[in-house]
Length: 459
Image 1 (cartoon, rainbow, N blue to C red):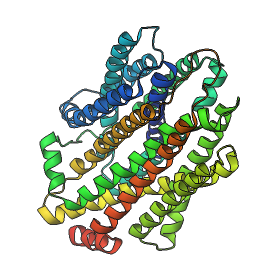
Image 2 (image 1 turned 180 degrees about the horizontal axis):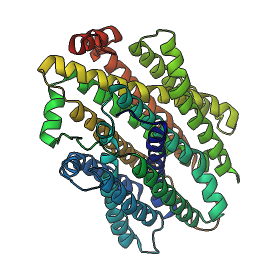
Image 3 (image 1 turned 30 degrees about the vertical axis):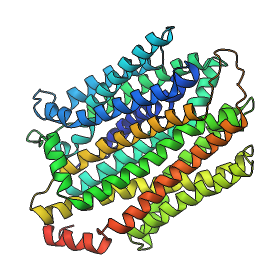
Image 4 (image 1 turned 60 degrees about the horizontal axis):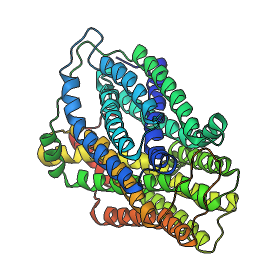
């Protein structure tokens, strides 16, 4: 059954809403609870890490539940709709915390954030798992995956571009109130986009879904050394991205400073988000059009990102931290490279499926791709814990509420913030590049050779 344009568009719309929700949580929960509500940063980071690792471990169990579901609406859509509605309510609760004392707020945050992770998994797993159920055409499945990943990037970019601007417009000096309104708006958009997805994405009646246990997932991974290489690379790259997104808001508020810091942060994030999309949709296809091998593009993109961070580090050490145009140039380089890398890691993961089949005789496609969701969540959890730990170590103090007055941080704190924002992501990318060069063997030529042995000359 060939997919229509409307179905592909609906699936992409679902990805936009879904990743708007994830990006809001991944990028701003630490800032909201540490800087605005004044919980200890290390505590917030620890809870975020524990919750995300638990959430990642919960993914395969959710997959089993979805696989065993049988309704007249299909296997996936009931979970997608129910998970969306529940997650929208919990997202609003996450950014609309009541007035509580610190011990009570710690309990509230821990419970609500874990609930957010569980309800997000309820809709995320069926969203990605439904692809084989709506079409049996290999080309359509590939195109739908690309549409989903690309539109997910758009959703993340929209949050990066608009969140703090809307917080300022809707809440004024009261950031707590601003975040409450932003969470409400994003929750409504989320529900509408997933309803559109549910209405158009109808399953084939004979669709089947493999169930994957945690044991099977890790067993398949450890038998496939190239899948391990890709998974470790994804962890390091995503950790660098999440470290940047978590630290950059503190940099603009306390280092770049000024009454219009929210507008400057928004402009910087807009440039970064646009460059990330440009990397995915324009730069990568152009490089491939020039017949440049994927493994070489990976090296180029990693070096691009490291160069961007290195330039930013030099600017920070020289004290050039108040010129948005100068700072945006290395930032654009790093974000564009990240867009390219996000496409490449998905491509490499696909190649590792063929490699695993050649090595073991079993095609563990669903298992290997389940690991992608797992490791991205684990990477974001580790990154946010390091963010919280770093904020406490450098002694950064959050603002008092509702005054609009930004607390002046010490010179040592600002220096520490600059180093954390640049050196940690750069170190992660360098380790990823070195590890990739030494261990990755799935070159374009080898991947093509494997594909021909497994599938003949089929397109």
